[in-house]
Length: 344
Image (cartoon, rainbow, N blue to C red):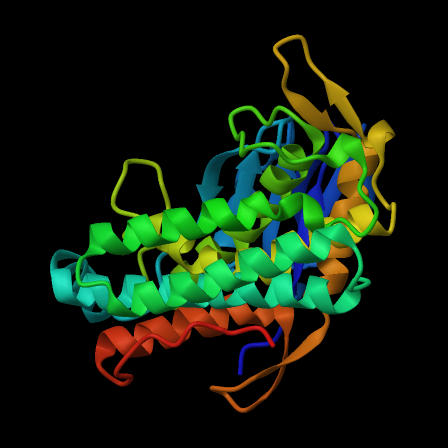
């Protein structure tokens, strides 16, 4: 069983990462601020202007430590990955499946069913935690009912475009209840619509940042089991887009990313002071806000959860790897369908 390792986040502008023996050395103004062994890491995420030595990049690649480079707004720019592990026959089968309408529909259906089921669970959890007399409960119940209708429709879908339409409608209903996931509504975190490039309000800024961290984990998980992160099923091929990683993100997004975001909001761990608005309207998080989110993200990933397929408790941080491995088993023919992780 693969063990849960840590992700190193480097945010201090002008930092330089170098190799010192079997460790990653983080230097600021030529002073070494930290050293971390390669064997304790599964990834490195650099935000903004961060330098990397050639020796560090080579050593990380050989150790299976993926490096993601993000700009100062938290947008993904590049990845540094070593030689792809796994059997080339697995990738061949992945490509064949992506060209087969029936197999594509089957995998995409599992992805959508996992997403909608987990969205519904998030909504039902919010209903359970709320006072039954709160007005938001009705909004949450209505959205949860629509998720159930979406699940039934996805099970009957006979074409991939039909399935995408069902998923899109369900996503609209889910986002329509987003503001009701706040236990005490704060206008600053009001959600009107999804804006990505750039995020135009604090809630979208939070979403983009947490989704980017999730994308890093899923991209690394795909590559670690020998899958091509660029070739997906629900998300079709597009240059520069990790389609398969985006597929697998769907089942994690509601219960892992969104729940974390609203937990931070409801506990008032993030506030208006953690954001700034640029001249073009883009809303960025402050370094302090990012540190708060990264700390909460790492803590959440270290928590244990029961996985029904492997039949044991695992850390949440290992789930992306397990789901990528289950998809690989399905593509090899060892599993009849891809089983998404359903949060309970």
